[in-house]
Image (cartoon, rainbow, N blue to C red; front, side):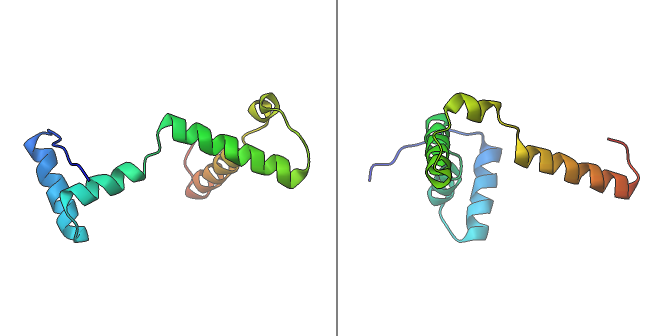
Length: 94
């Protein structure tokens, strides 16, 4: 495997070194793990397409992408409702 050098500010390098030390890995391994956790736009689009295809197969209905785009954000709405309930319980405004 070929490696390369990434230039960052000294403070960033020191921060990465400390994080790597805490996890018992090298800085390179830490950066690889961090990068693996952040999918690219192409990877997110691929995952979205695969998820939509799974929904189509599971439901047995050919839902066009346009209908997926117009569907309500159910999970987003659940988060909003939960946040409103927490704020209400704490007595804070939205």
